[in-house]
Length: 246
Ligand code: ZN
Image (cartoon, rainbow, N blue to C red; front, side):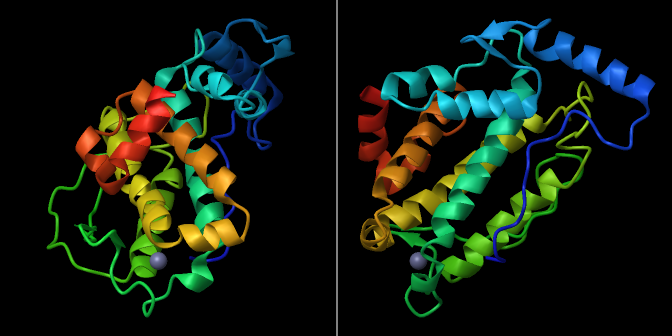
């Protein structure tokens, strides 16, 4: 892991835009996403960051968590997926960041989740959101290297304006939904590794409720949009079942 990369949601307005462009972007956004000044829970939701803040503020209870993952009326689905994937990336980065000193090539020479599951790294190339054309042979890596590669791989998509457009109303690539599924499936493995091999350290740090809430939010979101198939929950299948039934 390279520190704590600054990731933010796609921003609707760039400071370099001219006033008339701002005007256009703003009205476009209003139409595309949340309607004209529509009130949500008594709050004015007018840009990406507001939506995210609104979501965070509503995560107080389980019921609120279930409501928070639902696509708001008039919100673009891809936009909603994009905002959340960036958020979850940041959460995972933060959670894993707290235990990196305990996850080395010595302690975790392979990216496993229990002895039953090993996740192999497959170097891929993706062009404009397309899934890999020529996958290379999967290789076994220490967990920390696997996770660093995975985070860099996801970061590469965030940095690509053709895949995660920064401009409101700019189209997402056709393959965006399938790319989101692949990213979700892979990021989940980091939760699995933390749960199966670093839960003790997370508990020692007093972060278990953060980890649980983060995972629950993740699986509720994945479930709402059918992003991860059941088998991909691997060793956490029972835990995920419990979280979804609560
Ligand atoms: Zn580890």
